[in-house]
Image (tube, rainbow, N blue to C red):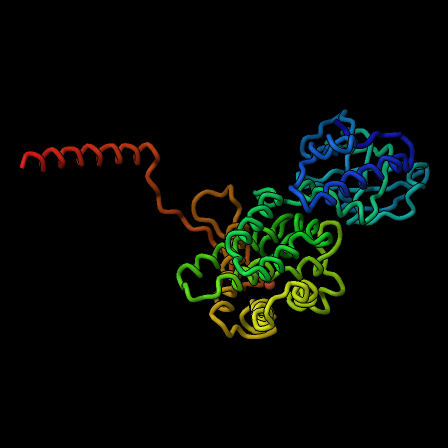
Length: 396
Ligand SMILES: [Fe+2]
Ligand SMILES: [Fe+2]
């Protein structure tokens, strides 16, 4: 089912674009209750589901009606007037496109980073697929911010909504002190932050630089911290969990744009640690948390980078602050190792030189593990031996 219809004229998507916006807004307004799938929302709103047509699946002759990221845009001249030469992008690939005159005159300015609802037909030009645009509408930033980013950016392997549900379950399990629970849950259910969390990468490049990457990182750091708290039971498990789940929350305002891949002015001026502390203050105020606990929490956020040269506002001064710093660092480095070496390469493989780390990273040869059948055989053999031993014991 298509979400919008193509009207074949310049700007012809305008009326239907509002529906896309309303539909996404409906999904987000439901944030207090259980998350709805696009299909459930469709059943409730009657607005057809938005369907993304992957660039990698296109072939010559296909009719295209979908939303893409404008990756490149230049206005050129031909004998028939000015035309736009574009490159559209999604998570699966890039697509060359042209908007010929007179339709090109409807778009005085187009720029990389904009999202556009596009209609047209695919043809082959110089052995490459190319889209001739027959209608297009540039989405408002507010509309674009509501699109499922996994269509446009590489995304984390787990759906963001599942990871958010895991975070909420962890809060319910660990927070026995009501103000902690109230504080952390209020951040994760905030009307502005929740939709941003569902898509945010944890960084522009470096680690977890994909849609859902921030949630994946927060959940993973929280998991590591909870294991450390098991090992060191005298740690304040609840303060540590709050710190783990919220230490990078300032990244939501550090990166901007529909794909959250550009630093905001605020992000450049303050950085995500200061932004996080400012962002969380009103939630802390309303939580009823004891001032000493609130102060410890702020210390966890302020010191999680470990050293001043890496942006820490304070140096870790409590066991929980050390635990959070090491868990954060470990998760970032392991993720970076995994993602900088191409998965398809067999055996030992090295990444290109990583400037920020000052080294190349390696995926080493892995110690062979017994094949499942071998394990089963081993298990059966062990059982047989056990029985023989039992029999021998009973004979003695
Ligand atoms: Fe950080
Ligand atoms: Fe982090």
